[in-house]
Amino acid sequence: MATIETRTNDTGEKSYRVKVRLKGYPAQTASFARLTDARKWGADTESAIREGRHFKTAESKKHTFSEMVNRYVKDVLPGKPKQAAKQKQQLEWWAEKMGVYVLADITPALIVQYRDELASGQTYRGTQRNPATVVRYLAALSHAFSIAVNEWGWLDDNPMRKVKKPKESRGRVRYLDDAERERFLAACKESSSKELYLCVILALSTGMRQAELMGLKWQDVNLKDGFVILHETKNGERRRVPLSGHGLELLKQHAKVRRLDTDLLFPGTIHANKPVSLRRPFENALQAAEITNFHWHDLRHCTASYLAMSGASLAEISEILGHKTLSMVKRYAHLSDGHVSSVVSRMNDKIFGGA
Figure 1 (cartoon, helix red, strand yellow):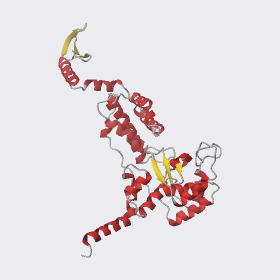
Figure 2 (figure 1 turned 135 degrees about the horizontal axis):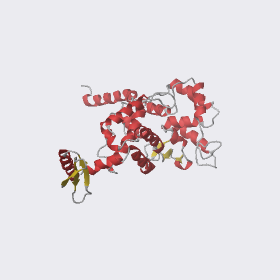
Figure 3 (figure 1 turned 60 degrees about the vertical axis):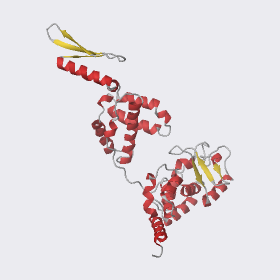
Figure 4 (figure 1 turned 180 degrees about the vertical axis):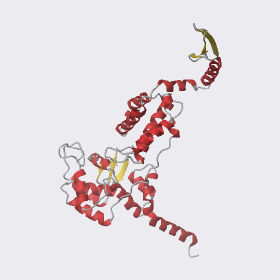
């Protein structure tokens, strides 16, 4: 319960020292110039302790935002090796802006202020940050707050719950039409790089990401049954990727001249344990084929687009590309409109027949 002690100084001014004692909790004290304030604080504090609110609030006043980020980087990010470097950089940006604040003073309004500053800023390339980048920064911040709330007890609630995320674009869909693809593959064949044509064919025929393709090792390739196993993927799950047709035949030819000083399918010429760099040969081939606004990752968009136009369902495309949900492949839905129409037509024929 709360007890109030009256104190008088040398000038005759009174003050009121409140002490709240509850069994099982450390005593809480505070001083006030007015008795009414002292009584209110005593009653509020006692109520907060009984309801389990007081000490959580006290913790948020003990720790700064920088402390939260430092602990998160030290204790949490090592368990997320693929995202660690990027999220560390994102959190350090927030710490530069809000590091000196205690957690109790981090409000949704403050976060919104720096969210807008982030959105209006420029990247190292001199271009304005896109909404997707801002969303990634906010996601990293939100998870750090969630850990501080749920595991460390440093906060009562995550202030990010009241912060609106910018709307992301629908996603880029750039694929090569038949004429572009023919010109580009011809240019890849003429490239000074021995690996470029094969790598582009494999990327187009399987939908593998560049990092997945360049990280392939011979022990993960089954040429007899026509598949590879990807152990390191973006979503953290192993994936079996089928190989067939032209890509499989080319890979069988490539296996006949494989290097014995490395397990990589496509090792570099200088460092055998590092993948070959195809950036310059790829750009040269694009230039020779007169193709613009195209990046390596767009080869993956080509795979998805060709699958959609060949009648594959969104679920099938998602499985082939290794997405956990259908949301990422909905951007290709319009390309399968013809397939959807034929499905509806068959359903109507079956139901209504010649009626």
